[in-house]
Length: 573
Image 1 (cartoon, rainbow, N blue to C red):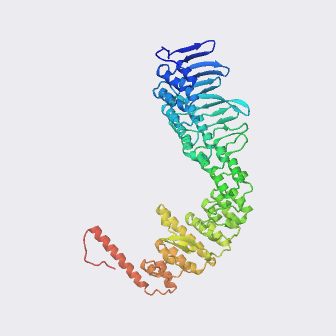
Image 2: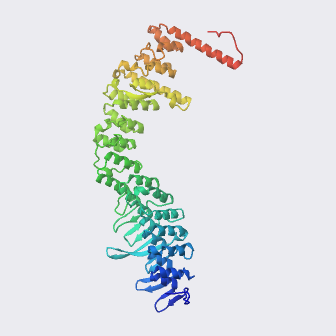
Image 3: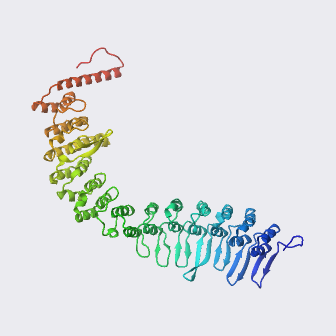
């Protein structure tokens, strides 16, 4: 045992040319003994803490400091020794050391293989991240009985070896992400493996639990399209990997961050190929698969991915493959599907919409012609035809639909909301309650929408053989269509409804009929129409008087406000 009383030189340094070693300090030799008592004693009596020992042997060249040696061969009883050296800044644990001709590493990585939480905390607190950014580690690893060279950055190694139970390791990764670290540095093993930090995370069990750190990597510039390798045969990107696992959460995240879903792997397969292959292998719903592919492929699906689609497949909201194809504006494949499965277009989703409804929304003209010209019953899709005509002013499809369809439109209803209630209305009432003022952006647009409404009502009334007469007189929340149209202040619409059978004497919820409103609002054209047909006017003349009185009262109020004077005279009627 060395003792200070006997004059032992604890700062002694040994060099030997013959034995090929240099800078063997007393402290290093004590560490080599792996005896905690000897190490602790020498540590108290030496000033040479960070001298780097080097030596050669049959395994190669070695170079490390005493603390690096202790961390490499760590035992729990070394903790206080390492703590004293590190916390007193006697030795830098951020440096790199050599363990053989082929091995260069850093103490930062040694701690990751130990389960001693106190040690990991110690390293985490005292490491200098800036020194680790650009350095590369090297070692050898045996694969199938052959030694292969391995190279990696500290960051790529931590990402690859990270264990979800090792929160300290995750803290280190987070600390490094805060710096200007190379987030695309690869971990390489011979010609067999080339793994990016991004791939390291997506290949872990349940990778979605790492979504936050994957997002951070992407924000820092991690490339989801970087070619990687995980065996001797295939090169692929992280996008390929998550697609091949059917992971729609991470696939969407990669797409939003520049992921290329058409890039080919070394076997000529794209991520979309891999995704479709996974879905097919696991017998996933074909309609949902098609929806995913349209989303991921920017609405340009290569249909070779989805040969043999089940035409009966439906999504949770009951959309079939034709609905989805139309929704994504794919007219060519929509028509091909329609030819192959004619009845698909009639099926309704959970919102009561069929393919015709979607075709109008997406403006697929050729598709619409195909359905309408086929003289197919179109059912409630007529309401979509009406919507199209109300907004565009083009009544061509509406006229075709009424002419070609064999439907009894008197039975067709659509549910609309009125206040807190939902009411079922027919096509005439539906059109009559259309408020074009809500959809007009200017006075010019207002007149255009008013004209559209007039033309649609005209087409519907011309096709009255397919509507019950009651359709023109059905009440919506207490008002027949002709009363509902009073808000439009358009005599031509009112006249149109009268010509086609609307009853002028049916009263609305406020107790007034079309006759009452004609006299009340001085609608001379309607009054002439009523008088020529000898419609019983009854008490409607009082509506005219009421209208004059109200107009006079409004005039008097306006005069008083503008002149600032009160008048006791009654305005002239």
